[in-house]
Image (cartoon, rainbow, N blue to C red; front, side, top):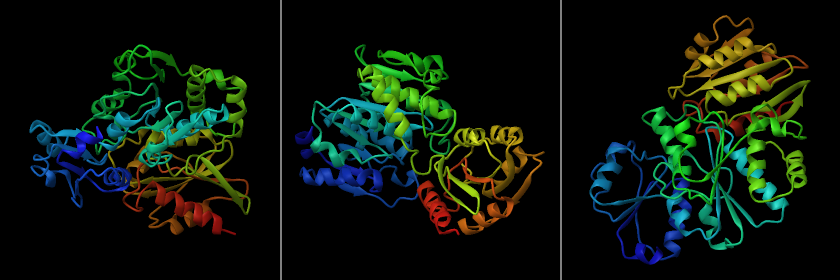
Length: 409
């Protein structure tokens, strides 16, 4: 593969976070390439990719965009950082996808494997870029990869063990439909052989469950209900059981699984209790970028709380969030932010608590939330959508929330 690339005309399309380590790898292996960057929308690339032999597509450039499909029709090989890693990785890969819970499940699987004495590498949004550790991988070890729909859409290999958590509408500003989003996710299974395994959520559609030839195993959250855990919320039982099922495939003793789960800390920005200030608890769920984790977060709260919700409008339906708000016995106040404010206000019509809107930055958002809370309450930051209207991304909004909470006195 390396030798073949050296003789081809190569482009790396998009030089952001997802392709930086790939570019370093190509340079280190004396593979010349043209960096293509600084476009504002995919249509600007139409016709500019057709003369290459291979292009490495950034996940942010839709696979079904006209620029990519036209290049493919012209005979260009469409690759990506993820596809190349699968081709070069010498060890078995455990791949995890789903709409939410990928990071927690990937991290927990890696912790269990490490506790069992297995050489383990964790890659993806939650771990290290896989090209940082590619040269260090021992074939006797295991790679754990968190995989998004963007990365899976044109994948032509599947992991040895595939994990698919629940899949609900998301990224509909990138994918043309929910069906396309689901089809992209299904690639994690579709190339499996009968000797490989798929750990699947029971709510996946039948056609999805039947994809690929891997042996199917079902996530059963009731099996881990008695596990000691620091992970809040019923939804985390799915993540814990998915990790347990993977560990069982690899013949890891249940005592190791239980101990690791009990010690596992919530990941940053994922329903993570921060601290108490003046009797008010602050909970950081800034990585809630669609409605389902916000609903799960609302349902996990056992004390009176104020919810901070809202952000960028990426086409999500907030009807179910509104229903969860109205059904919650503990929710006493709402701070609604961002472009989706009106949608959330309509969805939560009839809410008996106080509602504040109009905050323009994190300081104003927190000040509004504090004004609705009193000692014994919690403030839950669970936006339920992306954040590009007010913040750079979910990392930025999460860090701003954490920093301000830590400065509070």
